[in-house]
Amino acid sequence: MLDAHQLLWTQIAAGVCLLNFAGLLIRLVRLRGATQTASKWDKVEGVIIASEVDQPLSHLSDDETDATPVIRYRYPINGHDFEGDRIRVGGVPMTTRLLAMQQVSRYPLGAHVDVYVNPKNPKRALLEPRAQNNIAGTVVFAVIFGVIALILTAHAIAGHVLYTDNGVPLFAFALPGVTLLVAILGIVSFVRTRQLASACRRWPSVSGAIATASVIEELIEDDSDKDSTTRRKIHRYHVDLRYDYRVNARDYVGTTVNFGWAAVYASRYRPDEPVTVYYDPDHPGTAVLEPNNRQGSFAPLVFSAIFAIAGGSLLAFFIKVGFDH
Image: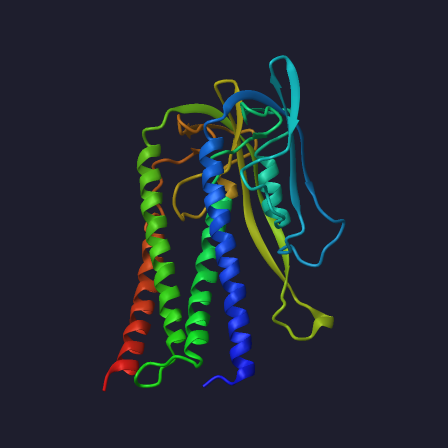
């Protein structure tokens, strides 16, 4: 049984998690509705007038989320010029310097871009109305808080920790549940990747050029070391590959080489090298260089299989131990 103090804190924690879950659900509904509405806004030509990363002069580790991409664009409506800085619905949160730089690199200064403008209020505009980044993150957090709220609420109502007949706490079943959820997400990723890989082979192509082909080094502080006076730095490397192309008088910067988990080597491409870019005719900002490259396409499926076996084994073990007599 939970004593009065433990029960009080369990009820408070359950209430906080329920409030967070409800808030995230409301935000999810609003984001979904705003995304669908924004995708129908009027599309006009705009020009990037500012593209930079807002970041502090120094920081301890490159995995700190202390940078913000700052992108401003100008667009004309009925003979009047307007300026905007919103990229997608929900805004762009602070992120790492590398991710902020990658976002900024997609919109170089002077590039001609599509701007989606609210016909009822021309001052409101977006560059990526269909972006799902904020929605995906909200879904993940909503699931986490929902599961925690469910477990804590059940314990608060019962007034004690819930166990199976053989004494296994019910919250232990959350571990195989999360593992199986990861497996399901991997399968979804595999299906989506296969669909994109199949579709891109039928996409139209256009001439482009490699803008950047280099390797970026990040220094990550190892916080596993308990001695804070001698923190070890971990070196992490990323391929920075970007290519420029133009479709219907609009400038685009692509970063995707192939749809899959295949390794990308910067040495395979040289700056200013001409390349053939295959782009989605419905969304020209989505493009690929190697539509026929299937290397690594089954990696998400293998990843899912590992987690499915682990989650299924854990679930079977808990059921056997918890309920068998």
